[in-house]
Length: 296
Image (cartoon, rainbow, N blue to C red; front, top):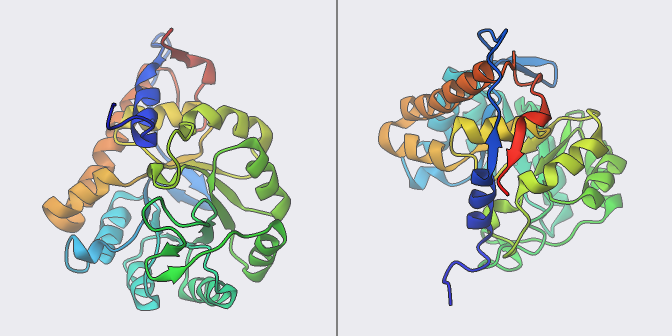
């Protein structure tokens, strides 16, 4: 039996690689990777994913990652972590999205949302695909129990903060519709890097349907499997506003701290800019989705 059978991460990688891109160079011009999010302007739609525990990779790893993101002009996302860690991240100047796990302790969720807003976060959100934990951490996120959240509960989280509330872990039109009904300020199309279910549909396979449903009413982000600029380009072409990058950022942090993170983001962004130029796309918001072809 194939040891990787049903591996959602590998299925996602294979799907990325099955998508091809037309060249459109007549009348092409130098492109920009700049984009706007929640009323602010950034140099690139290549964002740091909602990572956690990077202090185990490098001392002050989360803050160093934020410094690298800020230097690259990219948004920073943050996952599980203490209040002090979030404050240190935001103090670097990185515009930060704080993602809260769907803890069984509802009061803990509200406390974390309140703290993130007071600390100066750009937005907040929740991993709604982690409601039963991961395949190897069933029922828990780190040491904290997690549990499914109802639509009414998510509505309560949305109302509890003055910041945009992002629903992370959407992989169907059904959940996208519910996220919009809850008042979400953004959606992350993701399967948690395959950590929650084997044979998960690749995010880019579902993305065009979700983009049609959303109709530009809120930003759409893609997480899972984005490792290079061409991956980012394909996601943007199919309806994403921006993408989240994890592995490349961690590799950069491991090699050279904040400077390594900056370089990783800028390298991916440079390849994205080249793809924009070679397809006649002036910026991330102006890519013709028909430019994507699928291997037969």
